[in-house]
Length: 391
Image 1 (cartoon, rainbow, N blue to C red):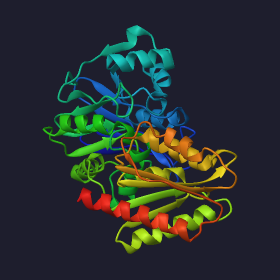
Image 2 (image 1 turned 135 degrees about the vertical axis):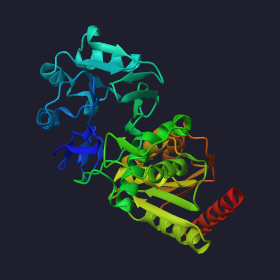
Image 3 (image 1 turned 135 degrees about the horizontal axis):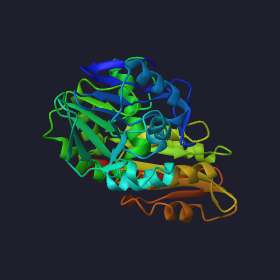
Image 4 (image 1 turned 180 degrees about the vertical axis):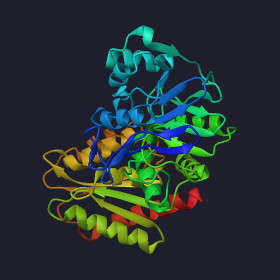
């Protein structure tokens, strides 16, 4: 990807990865991603803000060569290697450059990339670094999403280089957001899968940014925001305690019994004015489950019994929900069994991180009968009552 100018002597020099479809061997990214890196050239000094994934080092170095720069500093906002992995190659080309980061990040970089101690310049929260006519301010943003993360603010140009904060896995040739709807969904999914467990920390970090004048937010993945309020308002909504009148039902059904229960519950809730998202785990990307968890106050987990426990798909979805710590208020379990088991106990035992109230489960033997449907109706009525109390 060719370099692009953001403002005078400020350039985007990173790379777009059009073909990547899996991140951290875990997260599906159907729209690809980018590794955003930025060059800030002052009258006295020049700084590179973050690098790129090692697979794209050649694109970064080509852009730097085209700009004919002499690097004095490499600012590292985050030690994860999609940001820092090109540092060793950069230091080979620019051996006099110093690595500028915080103390926690420094220790991780020394471990991950074997960078010697003498290469580092350690900065504190809100400390500044002058490039002559441009000033970089470092803002600690811990647990977004690692303990050492920080952002870099270019004061004169009012650009916040936010690293993973506000990012999206969305490959595009446009430097700024042009399709707000598409980027909103990508950014929300990015938040759901990566940031949601740290919702309280993100609230604190957003508070740190409220008095800073920002004209451009430049994250490390996805397009940049020249309308910062677009993504700032979205994050404020996602991290708030507010929820929608919605129930998500992640489920798997082997022989139709559990599916019939899900269909009956969904119909009963829809009839009572509640939005429902049944998520068939046999065909649904687990990232879509994470996305649905951002806004929902209620999750009903539905599973058949496999041997003595829940279906493995349900185990994975339950583990994910527990790990992501969404703002769920209520949880229930429905499902079926043949000759016995501990499916319910195992599912509820996996939800220790969540502070949600457990509503009366409905676990049946065999195919659901009339009395079973009545129990599901009772559960639907209870969910409606709980949602009414949230308004």
